[in-house]
Length: 83
Image (cartoon, rainbow, N blue to C red; front, side, top):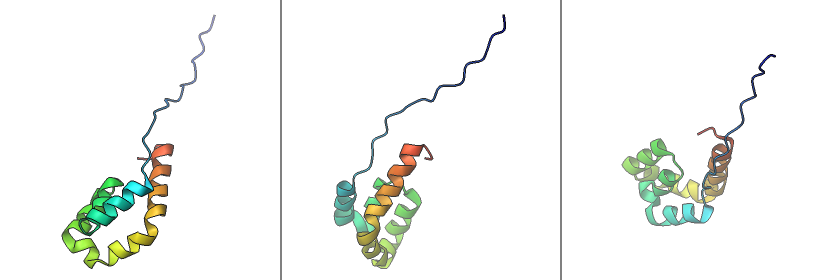
């Protein structure tokens, strides 16, 4: 009798997705300090915003238009398990 090795079963973990609405709330209240970047788990970019005033406010304005795609990217990475 030979013992076959069973294929490893994937472990499913429920991950809480980031919300575009919450990200915009952080952007509105704390965008100048990088609050929305910290919420998305982008600590390096959050620190950059914190110390440069949102990249002299230019980064905050750009994030106004790109925040939905940033949230979508983070949620995709969380779902795939990259992060």
